[in-house]
Length: 387
Image 1 (cartoon, rainbow, N blue to C red):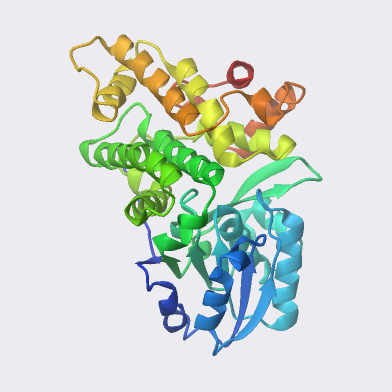
Image 2 (cartoon, one colour):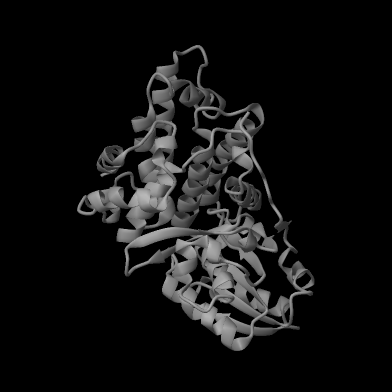
């Protein structure tokens, strides 16, 4: 078992009455709050009003319009607002994009320069406003980790911002809130959860505990995503997906495993930086092709374990047969929940593949540490296969 550290200071508050517990959790943070959110969905569903009612004893400042693949321009504007209004803490109401942006806002509010500086160099983050999140969609796991991903359209970059200071103080998760999430976002969120899990599970060495966690998360998503799409108001399925989201990206699934450079995320961030596609969909398109690229005699046992323990395949079959069948099942599952299976279907061509492959080593973990090492040619091979 490999050495590891696990630090999870965020309080997870799950249940139908969770949001009403927000004011008590924030009681010691001051009286002025910035509520950050995205488009109009939180207004249409009444969730924003519910949050504002819970925070009625606080002075509320609102910041709306945070984009999918959130922009550093929005982060800078909100951070400036926090400084001007002497905001004491931030509440993010939304999915992964809003929570990611809110983390950068919390850091940017305590920094006089461009928030992109903090994305490029997290050591500059010396302080941050307290953050609370109200989750709307099971996907990124940002409600239970210390990282966010921010996009800079001027430089065509989509990069992580990471600091222990960015863990939410508490995250409030009412599964009923997610029943209004459309099928497309439900499916993309499911793909994101599965990708988080694959990035930590499909490594050279695992262990009984972390492998069990990973396999349970994958089976949970495979079981419950079709239910959520067919019956959006199924609270038990929504709750299972939310829980899988929270534990998918917090580090728990990787304990003791071979460290992973998260290759699919590194590659997908490049695609989104240039083409602004839905993150989960991009991951679903890339993942089976990354699996094929990574499959060889050395890695086949890992894929075979996935085939047997997640898909219930016959363990008596040879490992390469199992591995190929499991990769097929993965692609078939993503297609079955309505995700396009080719980059060209989401408006991506190969015009920037060379630039993408060149950029990854400047901003990401070395892909030489992946399940099967990936060099520049390998990145381009995966991207072209995904077309």
